[in-house]
Length: 209
Image 1 (tube, rainbow, N blue to C red):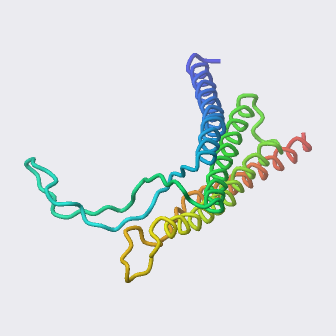
Image 2: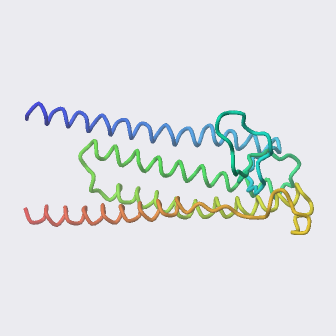
Image 3: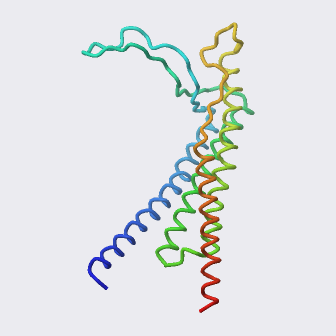
């Protein structure tokens, strides 16, 4: 084996160790730190919210050589206390689904890296892990955003009281939606199908030898 091939194999293994180890750290941090903060917030009644805003920037910002010609707030990170138990539960469950989705995807990536290190990329467990990650992104993303959006609506109503158009509420009743997790989920499920097809081809090839 040439020195170049040896270097490439060592580099490949090093990258896989970094990716697998990093995925495990991300998953562990999501469960440990994210879960701990989730419990603290739920127990204390303080709920972090990301709310949509549509208001112009205040006057007098700047002082440099450039000038602001147009600007507006599009979101606000706030913390709410005194929300009803049902709203707190709904928002907590939504955040929990988000953490579980992150952990599931991280575990799948780590498992794939481990199998690649062992030279076993086309096994049933790899396809299952990728399919689980894709399904987690699809289902977890929908549940997290759906429950979180509905819970945020209820929280805004409790915070402002009057949310009718005539009252011109500071935080409008709109739900943000990020399609990226759903797209990533579909992509990972397609990759899982590709790995499953590769596994079957490998079995057919081994049967012919």
